[in-house]
Image 1 (tube, rainbow, N blue to C red):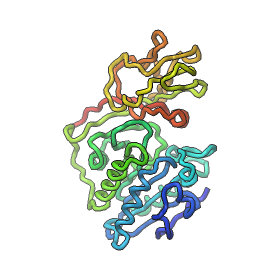
Image 2: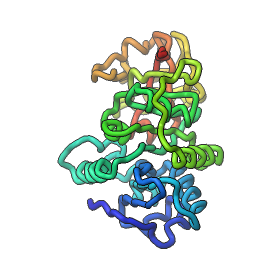
Image 3: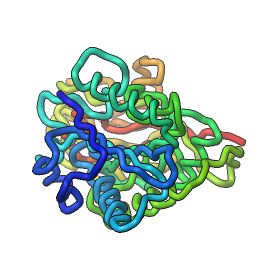
Length: 333
């Protein structure tokens, strides 16, 4: 697993879709492009191979500057091109490319540490990691530190901001140690408004002379805190809308995303005796499933008010990542 580092765009790169990038790139690639302001903006795309909005926005951005200098240097990391070729999150046997940014001994972890070291040395201005999700969600920004610069950067993308500390192995967490960093969620892949929103955000960030450091008020953003991650055990068979398998989830489940739902909201039905508890992992690594869900009369329902995010009907994504995250509104001044 080798990282390719370049100082120019490879010939034909901007003519390729995400699925075609493997025709030009051998694998994960870091490209440093010079702009009129030295401190670079770092942008990562395709950490998940089937989340293509970031690449589409980025190539439109670069095409728009084809005959002129970038207003700020840009360091571009193109992640899992092999998975992108297959239009999947990651290939069998591969790690999740957004869960390997902590120190470790694997080749992939060492590769990401090389990216981090290069960007530290270059005095990175800010970091943006572009993503999609599979369920119905608004566009929103995620931060790992409740500091003014992070909140200001997130505010530039969306009124909706999510603060989280788990999983701790993500790209934004690693970069938050030395620069303002944000993960942006741009809706589902291929949606034109998501590409346009990401493009406009990148254009704005490239032209920033500095990131404001004054506090963000409660009126300027809606701030939420991810308090837990909901997992379905691998041994449990999942279905949607049919009374088959062990857990039959409701068809309209992803409509609950970013809704402040009351206790007693149904998520589905338990159709066998194999499931008597849903795993809900807190930030401290404790299973607190009984605090959030209850099974009554075969119905799986919430046991306290909560707000889900990233609920998805894609069973493969549920297996690879999670069913959803649970959030609470976070008061701030």
